[in-house]
Image (cartoon, rainbow, N blue to C red; front, side):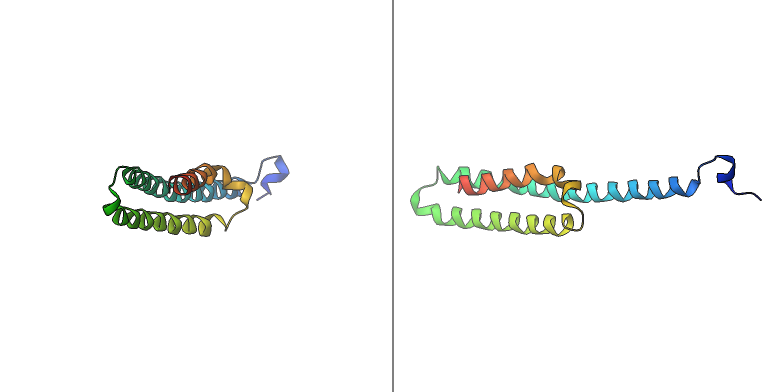
Length: 113
């Protein structure tokens, strides 16, 4: 049997390797997407708590602030998880996937609080 490259055909292993890389990339993007969905949901919860604080009487404000702190700590944990997953890959490769969500979280939590 002759070598397929001797007839000008491309080695099929190249395409198999490329497909494997595409599949791996899709899995990473899906994992990041799932983390970001959790972060987005937590952000909406935090924002609603902080909005509620503006109409809460001073006597009851402490419980609202504690609730907001708890929600913000959950976001911090989610961002730490995102950092753990994203740090396994070159920064340039996936930063466009998560940058905006992290910026929104920081703005909501620090400006709103």
